[in-house]
Length: 160
Image (cartoon, rainbow, N blue to C red):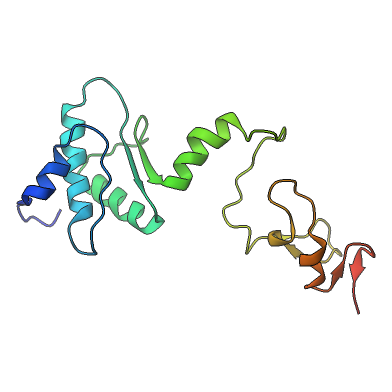
């Protein structure tokens, strides 16, 4: 990494050598990422049963930083399997939603990262509408939301 020897505090040592799942929270600059790297080093060195290790965070920025450091330390191979590094959302999608679907909905779920900025335009002359104009569960158009964009679902054309 940076060539400096890491001398963890007693609290950091407890996290590094903890035998089961751990949730780490601390202020910026407290050494969370470094502790996660050292925890990975310890877990991957002592884990001989072939089970994967999941490293989860709430933000993509934190995941990217951790992944970069794990690769710099040669602790992550490519492909990462059987391990996982990503956000909580991506973990839930990959291991719960995608394989098992959504209760009560027959359609196979598709991942749309952020519906707010995505635009639906089914054909060239159609008025484009953001995905926020559609119900997440049913996929049906929300007439009230479309009216704000001057689109009347009853007329199926733009209001003048």
